[in-house]
Image 1 (spheres, rainbow, N blue to C red):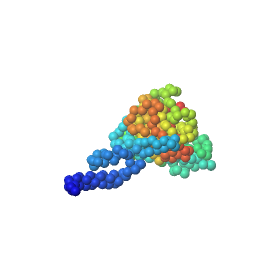
Image 2 (image 1 turned 90 degrees about the vertical axis):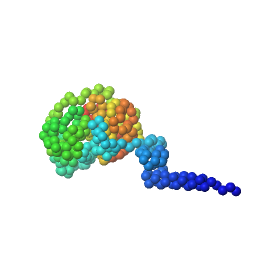
Image 3 (image 1 turned 45 degrees about the horizontal axis):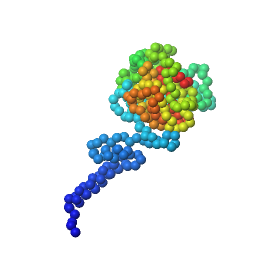
Image 4 (image 1 turned 120 degrees about the vertical axis):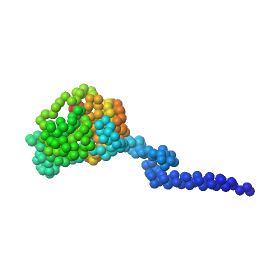
Length: 322
């Protein structure tokens, strides 16, 4: 019988070694299975080829798998926001406190080591306010005030309004520079004094029909108006679609220990909407968004004690769903 061509053995050996090397690389890099995308297997044929991020899979309505792309991490500023998966919406983060029987504003302030005015200003309370068990309070990490940045606000103006020091504000909020503040940001003003009146007229008034509901009908509100100018929505299911309440640009996406996965959208009039506790984020910073477009799915990420929902804030205008 005629012997096989030696070159055939060489070719087969080379193919075997190439396949072994490829699978070894895959195993070391990300693993093959549900957590790895098919496209990444082919990309690994070249060591210089970039490996795309693998979408996480989530259940929607308990019977459908959908790809949930996590927030992107990029370095340049996008529409006035340094974005990133771990970017804090308030830096350093404030705390949330649930009022217990017998609590007073003074006792809560003492418990957290801040001034009484800090608790009152941050939660829009007065000295005569009576706390109720179950009520939610926002507690700043230091004595001072909280400022919501509006379009055209400058750091020097903010410092003067609150009788505070600009450099201290920059340092405490971990800002890259005094100009790194943008509409919809919250700034903690250490030792700041809440002004009785802030300059008005920096936002375009909203028509009553400007926003649509951020979830499908029947639009069930699970918590009425609370910090910060927010209303919670849920129809009782996890993975429910969350819609952009109005058209605009995705300003920031990220994660905080309180808000969980969130999306911020800035609208043409400078008003910002915030969608928190999402189980998945489906948009990227800088993307143009149309009213009614799905931006994510309801969840309970972050600090969420009431089940899956979306925490919907309106920053810079009245929340029409209060």
